[in-house]
Length: 93
Image 1 (cartoon, helix red, strand yellow):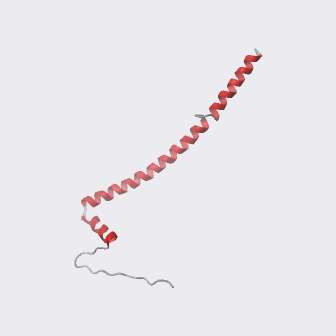
Image 2 (cartoon, one colour):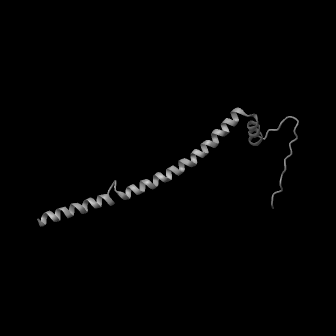
């Protein structure tokens, strides 16, 4: 009877070790839950960025104003009849 108690105690200790520290145990589960939370936050940020990009694409496809704005900002273009003024600030010496 004493041997049975010792064997069962060792078995309980082994199972507890696997539960708390072994692969697939609670420590691993907590780590995975933390990683899932971080990934969900990153996905939210990227989804917001994608929504902004989608709205920019729609504006570029449908409206002339956004195309004009892009041309002025990125390419330095001006409309016919407009006067271009360049303001140059002096360099600090």
